[in-house]
Image (tube, rainbow, N blue to C red; front, side, top):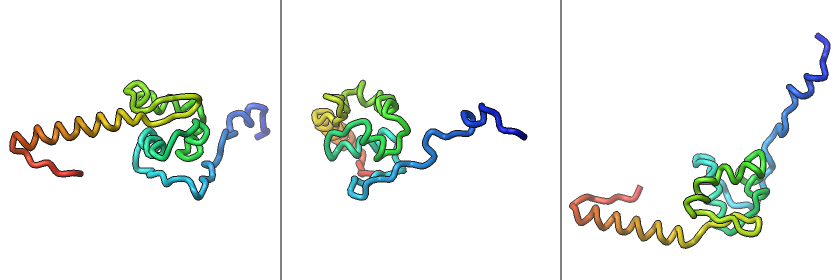
Length: 115
């Protein structure tokens, strides 16, 4: 079988191997979703889409916004000056709501166990 010009387009991979991670970068848990991995990374501070791609192994910087679409809409993550960052007020509000839910369950006689 002779090669055709289309073989190069059909058989070529854009990136055959994942990026090599920086050994000093924060650890990423592969058991969580991509969005969860990004949220864990952003706990250490704001990051660019390129840095997120390299740490979480997302193939393109244009996909970072798609992965974080729900978090951005909820206000959990903000995109400011080309950097993604966790919204600290969202985390505080979430902790407050969890405390209220826990208090309600305890007042109704339920036992609350941290998973």
